Image 1 (cartoon, rainbow, N blue to C red):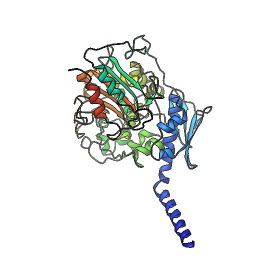
Image 2 (cartoon, rainbow, N blue to C red; image 1 turned 90 degrees about the horizontal axis):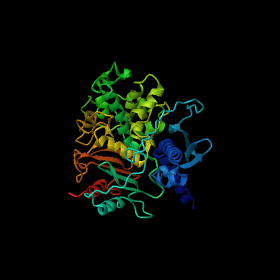
Image 3 (cartoon, rainbow, N blue to C red; image 1 turned 135 degrees about the vertical axis):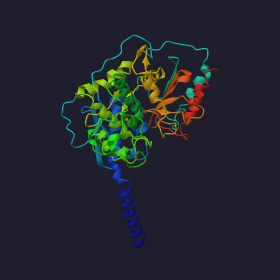
Image 4 (cartoon, rainbow, N blue to C red; image 1 turned 180 degrees about the vertical axis):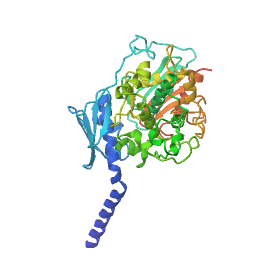
Length: 449
């Protein structure tokens, strides 16, 4: 019996040591992810806690978190076995922000000035309900089957699609939502937000206020080898700066999103590993650095806040969109854009029409061509904060498709050769759960040749 107890005690000690070595360092990130997810999902999209825990936070390790919501205080807290409690607060008009002990919650803050598009036009160029349209070259039964197939059957949790929106020749031809979601549901785009950030630079370029081919205006780099990095290099994820992005472990990206006060500064402080334009490396830190650079182009914080919305977002009627900030007040341009699936489709439509929105040229055609042209060393899979199919990632989809892409399978697919935009929002991706190639192929095949 004594021998058994000794063995049991040894096993417990070893298990505790293993937990401490492998898991404890992750607890701060886990509770941070959970608190931020709960605060944003609940206060931005009115999701109840149980829905968030069952559908947003049912990720390995994240599901260990114990969460609570304070309705009166408008914040959420999360901890792991009582350890590493994190807090995320909600501010109307700004969304949620994950805070630390240094954050002064009583400090006044500025709000972006928004202008809601009121033109009495039907969706997608307005916010009224879309008109019924029937195209003779669309096989609607085939289209419905393709859209239905993107969703799980009742009770299933494999494909986990939340929304599908399909635009064809400027008309809504298909739309479907999972249980608990509808056309007014605001859904996090994750890295699709990077494409919004790129668009802000596109407007500045159109206005002649920046030259993307000149060295990036980062004073901290002026006396070292990074001084030659251009905005073009940053937009193309081709700067050569050190960065690790691996969401299965503790890395630069996870520490930035769930610990950093100033997310743009994380990439700014990284050393150069390669010469610019020689080594493509996907980096959310780079996009947040771009957001910080954008902030520095304006004299005041108010101008910076307003620009994102007045230049693109509200200009095309994406009135549901909220881009959240980090603790320093910089938009998290890499990851934290929320909008309805319909509004995400409007963004795709802007690029489908080469920057023209219902007759107004918001972006130069040359900018859209620039964003959809393959980056050097990316093997045809990346442009300027947009993903591309030029390299054939999706073999049964036209090579001219370019798309916004986000964690867990968010997508705005833009297919110029078919005059089509396809939006899919969900909480799972990968060939074993959601087959994007098959999904896109099935929808495209509904267009009669």
